Image (cartoon, rainbow, N blue to C red; front, side, top):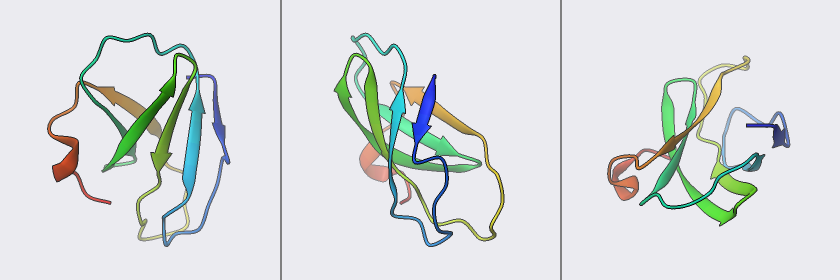
Length: 78
């Protein structure tokens, strides 16, 4: 992961975050992990994935990670 744009957002969530890096396929699905919350993501191209930031309970810095071949992304929380 090289960059997150934007790098911050409101605690209410809903911010679309573009993650830049090197993401060659194949994988069946991708999810984003913001702290301990997992949200679905969309593969845009080999260099960009878009995540929807979930609601947070406090204004704080959280670690962001991409999960490839995650469990059924339709069942993760938003």
